[in-house]
Image 1 (tube, rainbow, N blue to C red):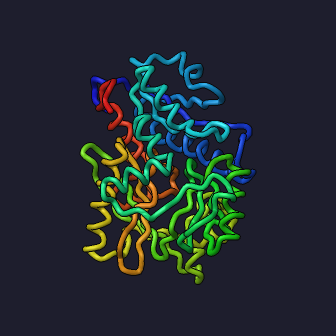
Image 2 (cartoon, rainbow, N blue to C red):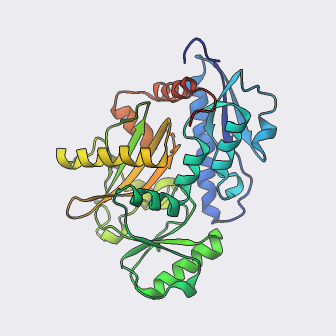
Length: 338
């Protein structure tokens, strides 16, 4: 952080006692956010004044004691009680209240969370993304669908709603999965062409944006190519087979040509969504080495066992240095910047 900026830091994160939708296991992701806030607090202590501020209801209330001219927000806020688009609302509120804060602005957050809008923008920009349809209920599963397909909630991140039954092969299983998303997550389903192949994570940060070492998920423990997905269990359930058998290789073993294409696509996706600070772009690579952007994650998980830190570590940063750089990027922007 520069000398002209405040060294008082508020670490904002959600702390929910319950979820208004989703599955009981989704609380694991909520607990992960709390653990991440503790890790960032520890990383920054000693270099600045740090306060952890959990959000239980409204961001406006919890930040009332902290003047925006005196405090910078390290924004780890996500979906309070599982409410839709709460991440974007928190960020829009920070913008309106005049805080400097880490990560992307509210508009970019909303674009990335809304998978339909994000994919539409990517396609308009000429960035390859798997074909898709939005389905609001089982009765809309008619006509032609490309199988295999993967079914996701239209506005969740952290692999919520993506389990063993997410990849479908026929109309009956598609209808059943759409019904599950509708009833459990209370939203429409994104039915996306499933790209059989490899999966890569691309971490990007900085101003101008810099691509960190590329990472690839090792799915070799899954002989069935349709089980080779980063499911909710693979991300959050430490006792699951998926969590313990999906190691990440970073730097990824990619050819120079493929690596270059993936980096270029990641930067193009960053620009299209309007990311700021740090982000992660997830891609699938088919059998012909053609990469497809499947998701752009503004403010991705910063836990010590998550992908962003793994890439930063491969670039030579320890956890504290990563946290300080993300904070320093926030302090460079003036109020009103995108």
